[in-house]
Image (cartoon, rainbow over all chains, first blue to last red; front, top):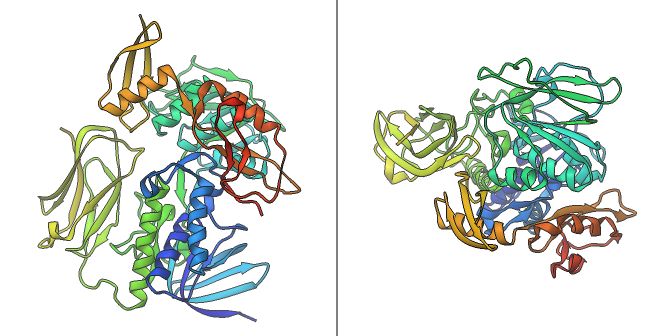
Length: 417
Length: 118
């Protein structure tokens, strides 16, 4: 017997994005909403991010992950939001029917007036790398290791090599060291690290952990358990250079090689994805190609800072509330295109003449440079900075007044000095 | 005269700064782009500090509780702080913000819980 429930708004995911979206929607008058969360408590990835540095933009202080999450959870409770934990969403369809399952309620189908996708992202796994070698135990993504150490109190190994120098890998290098493991090396394929300087200094240099740039793992040894890895330098085409091999005697390999928005549910709902972000194509209200289905946070595009996830998700919550009131922006849209040096601008389609925030990643490092927004070749906005890097998302506000009379497509590009 | 190279952590510029020292006193900072860099470099060569975060087991609970130093502690005391935390036995209930270890290793700084365990 199917259990069908009508809801104004269903939010999928109870991490920072889902919580902020729910808070904003309720504050904008949406009474009948539910947040579906597959873990046994809300908070998402912040639960396992016990280090500090969260909330600098939003609160002007450096909170740990659990502290940041607790503030949103407290606000959600104040507002009486209905958060269903231990509930896994199985599918969403184009008519906004959300099917989920939980031990407490069994199979349920929600028929929603609007849906907000807030499922976050996941780590690129070993299988996506094509690293040769055996399939032994002892190889984990950095985030999985973080969950073991910080949430379960378990150590994944004693002698560790980290492949990839993303922030999660760097954070785990320090964490494993402080818990008594020996971290032998951090190995990065590119000639630069995608992690923050702060983490290179405080997670590697502080503990004398060597960072091997332009290196990669070329072999993995061990039958039952990992026994060692072979690392080699790569040339400018990222091919291993013979004769540069270094052998590491280790029992653990952690992978920190990128994050991918988790859009399996979105695809089945018919949501169009952008190849540049691997997230949904959205308009200025963060609405996807499926009417009434919105997306925000890391499922839309991978952010660096949770503060920006919260900010974006507040906007998604307010937009969903407006949609439910029948006040969604109407009329023609123009495209926002990636110009030179720009990757993955969000949103990709906009209604002209509105207050707008554009977000993207630079394709390379630009010092003393500008971001320029053009409509039909005419500059309408510019933002200068001492440095732009791929590791730091750029947010550019475009006030309505600046493009009130624009009709053509917008192009965002980098301009070196 | 001694020189130390410091990478600035304040922003993505990551300026490589050279600090010159004479008899343990800073006599100059070069390579910084802004004032914050200079301040950080001076702090880093004279009295570097770090926040410490960790987890501590809680009796009769499957999940440990996350903790942090309320303020950054001297960098040289990080390992002592971790050793002190390993000796710690906690039991529920614990409120976020509650002191779990006062004046850790004589630094004058408390370790507090960052999560509530009811």
